[in-house]
Image 1 (cartoon, rainbow, N blue to C red):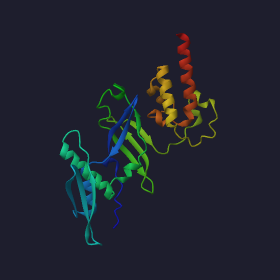
Image 2: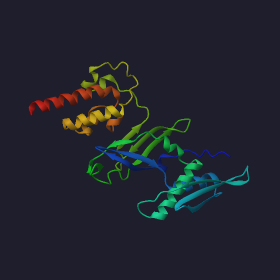
Image 3: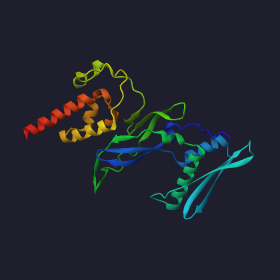
Image 4: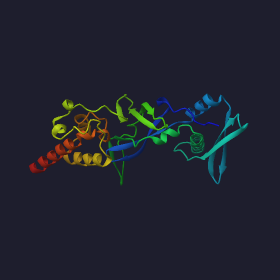
Length: 255
């Protein structure tokens, strides 16, 4: 029996905050139980069922689909975790969603790239938290594309106002005459298909920006009109670092 379900559409994917670190937050993609049930109805036209049982204090959910070739029910099970609100209901729903993933629904979400975006944060003991816990409320996937092997190849996420805050996938190479002066100070002939900077380079820029007292929003706007530091085209890296270090040196000399 072929369990290759169709790939999820952008409007079927939800976004929530995963981790928070200084000046940024990670976003996670997920689907809800209503999405799973809709796809099961779409594929099996009601010829599916669900079951729940408790095993050693843990809630398990099973999803059964009818196989007309084998003339029997095919089941997939998984365990859920408690939610912050309704304990038992949340655990049962989570178990159901996990069982659907085992069946094949939404498995492509596990191929998503690391999604880090700029955020307003503050200290919370030894960790960081969002200054506004609703900062990313209303975020949604505006577009998504997949490769032939069912992996995410393109992804855009927008905030509640429709502003793009994350982009993943191919970008057109920047034209030399559109680069700021700092970016044209080194050879760009080898960057005809510009990639983005590495995580280590992004962290370096963040550290220097903090020392220079320069907003990352200003940096993103000046260097490539990128939506966040992580999506800065690599061609801008050297110029950005050079400018930030010059700003820091000037600041220290004045002091």
